[in-house]
Length: 299
Image 1 (cartoon, rainbow, N blue to C red):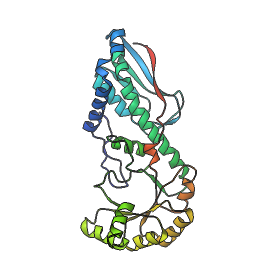
Image 2 (cartoon, one colour; image 1 turned 90 degrees about the horizontal axis):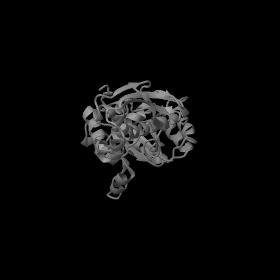
Image 3 (cartoon, rainbow, N blue to C red; image 1 turned 30 degrees about the vertical axis):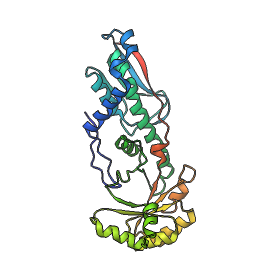
Image 4 (tube, rainbow, N blue to C red; image 1 turned 90 degrees about the vertical axis):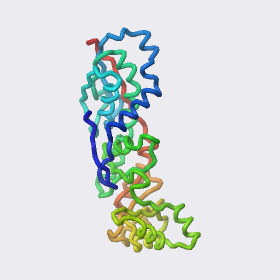
């Protein structure tokens, strides 16, 4: 079906969009929308009328989800012909055609909303990601995503981040260790230090698994670096504190800035020398890209 297949590695390649995963999501969406019981279309249209329609961008952005839209129409009616003019990761401009759909008009109309929901959502994530990536393009810092995704749609959300030029962080809890503030508080109250916490984890997992720890002060960041954590999250730290940690670290651990990051401060943060900047908003507070399906002509 032409969907991309990648093996995801922590902070490297894109996640795997399997055919079964995509088909299950589409089927769920059809069932949710009662797409095969469209009383409006079934009442008004002769099922044999054939037409052509265009997917058209109503706002500027980055396209993502083309092959999923194609699969939506294929699964609904395999006689529909889908021709794309854009591919995932490409810029699209206002009133530009993204794709053409031709075939039975009743089938196109009944599956239209499901198709648009996928491409509008995914393109919105890619567009928001791309905006922030461009802000920091003059630096070596990478924009990375989080696990703040819509349940069931994480693979699509992270794929869309990649299409926008971002980098995928850990995909789930099993992929890598992230020692968060609540882990730390629970263990500190039991007499552990950050050094002991990191050692406890390192002794209990494979050496291939990355260990990241969340820190909120220069002191905690230094201790975590000395203890051998692979990634130090600098959570809601000031610009000056981040600069100091970068200088002290001297490249030993990867440094990730996180918390309160917007388009207004992301470049200043990137210039501190951190390796990664994680932004949950790109997958939980994005605006869907405005895309419509416009009637073209009878065929």
